[in-house]
Length: 370
Image (cartoon, rainbow, N blue to C red; front, side):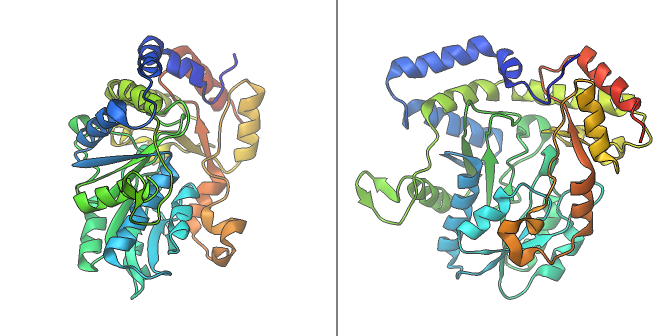
């Protein structure tokens, strides 16, 4: 059996008719930027996340950058101000900070949910600290009420990186805006709600921030050819918005399917060399962007899976603070993050994965020996 880590053709094929109809509608409309498709999606995504405003962007990195840039302007942060950020994340979280001439201060994560360790945040706060950036890694939310309490006590802002967590408040009782000044999302094709290319957005309850972000992403203009601030060009195109609207209507059911697949893995994997995510508990606490397992013999495990036709991916082999691009942080030691990066391996998990395929993966995994 051959099971790739992710076959987007199969995943998107589940909604092929609806997606094709939406794309064809945009093609025939002749309106490929701005317009009704963008407005409709922004309204739907804001409502789905319990937020007042949504500003679409070209990708998740731009959404994070716009969020930081606009808060920096509104709050008058000087260059070099510090943002405490989860150490276990994709490098985009760090790059958004440095793109805004701010300084990332990595905070180690917990061994039980791989999210920012709230017990370690306060020790990193100093006179230069302006914000905290929690990252909902793998699709599981951080302890936002505790982070909000810390931020409020120290008069800090919260920019939440939710690029891996697509959840609807109606089902998961989760609001992106309630404990955050602004939340950024990525709709990279492999996400739970992936576009047919790059796309992203931010949501917020702050109308001033939303207006500024919209202008910033439109060359700094609110009126065409009238540029009030220095901006960038970061726009979601109408085809992506139409496709994402289709996918949003199926997000609840597909997230539930991901949870069911995670439970199937939890119940089936019994190899003592492989540790289950979250100790095999709390399946309903994540929307499962990926299903991570942990193994001290990761390279051998990945090779074993590959030799039996099972694809896998490491999220992530090198943490941002150990990347050459952030050489100034290389001397930091963050043991939990580094252990995760040395042992994590993501198994196939997506709405198109069949029970037969999953049972085969479990059987191959359980037969692995060091």
